[in-house]
Length: 65
Image (tube, rainbow, N blue to C red):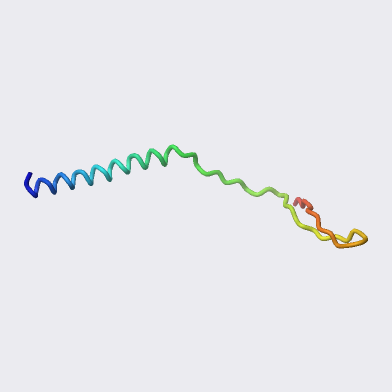
């Protein structure tokens, strides 16, 4: 082959690789499930300090709006 035809073959191989990669990448991206957003609920857990008669203690308390 001459240098010009070798460059054309290389150019065609690179273009084919880019197009093939785009097709495979698109198929992989389309096969994955969409992310799901979950809104926070109206309740939350809070660490609360309280006196038990002898010492300060901590407990987790759930507060709901």
